[in-house]
Image (cartoon, rainbow, N blue to C red):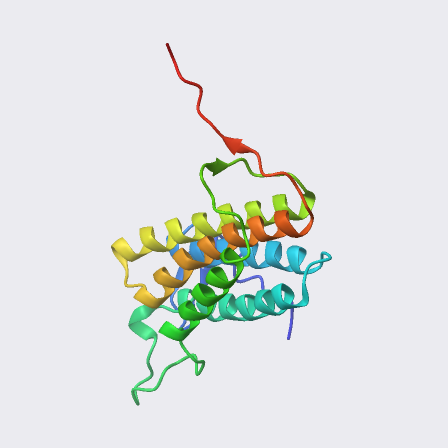
Length: 191
C-alpha cells in the first residue's frame, strides 16, 4: 500500500464509494476529529492505569475506527447494487453504547458523589483524559452538524455522546486512583 497518492494535492479527498469532497467537508472534519480522539486515547492507554481501563480503551479505539469508516462513507453509496453493505464491517449497536454505560456505572460506584463541577487537571493522566473528553465533544458536535445535512446513524451520535460521559468519569476515576485532588468549581457570589 503506497502512503502517498497525490490525489489530495488540490484540496479534495475521496470517501468510501468514490465521492470526492473538499478536505474541509463536515464528513472529513467528523472522522478527522475521531482520529485525533483515538490518538489521545492511545496516549491515555500508554500511561500507568488499571488493566481493565486499558482493555476498555482498546475496545473504544476499535469502535472509533468503525465509526470513522461509517462517517467516511458517502451515505448514498453505502450499499452496493446487491444491497450489501459496502464496508463489510459490523455497525455500531445498542450493545456498544451499553458497554460504555456499564463501565460508567461501575467506575461511578467507586467514586465519591459529585456535588460541583470539577476543574480539569490534578495529574497529567487526568488532564489527558479531559482533553480526550473535549475532543470527543467536538467530534460529537461535528457529527451532529453533518447530520443536519446528511444522514448519520443515530447509533453513532448516541455512542459519541456516551463516550464523552465515559471519559469524564474515567478522568474522575483516574484522579481517585492517583489520589489527585479534585478542585471544585464554586462560582463567586456577587453582592
